[in-house]
Image (cartoon, rainbow, N blue to C red; front, top):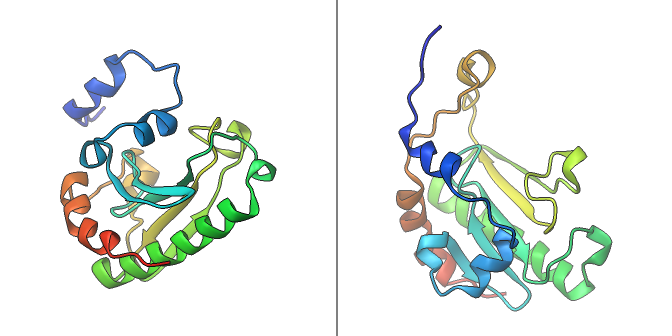
Amino acid sequence: MKQLWAPWRIEYVLREKEKECVFCKMQGEEKDRENSILYRGKTNFIVLNIYPYNNGHLMVIPYRHTSELTGITGEEMDENGRLVQKSVEILQERFKPHGFNIGMNVGSPAGAGIDEHIHMHVVPRWSGDTNFMPVVGEVRVLPQHIRETYDALIESFKGIVL
């Protein structure tokens, strides 16, 4: 058996699991860089996914805590959609992806890792970005550290006008 060392994961494995919703907690803190928050809108915010499928994988999240798509107001849904569009525009400009996966996993049976607070995923994709590693090794190879991704994107997100 081959070993894959990922010492940075020990912090996640050993940490005490929080009872408070991680999205509600981070939005209330004034630690945007530490929490990888790229933008704060009127009803939604944008954050980099700290366990990404690809570099630039971000989420657009309503401030209001709800687990149901039907629990989102029209105003929240409208801003969420416009922020998804702006996110795609910025990611295209900065990283030149060939495509995107965009969507929600509503409920844990549908694949939601954080099912208590609804959120929209925006995942940039490049031709050839899926290779044998996820299939054979159950490992994703990310070429850029999340802090470098944040630094590459933050100025563009500061300039969002809806």
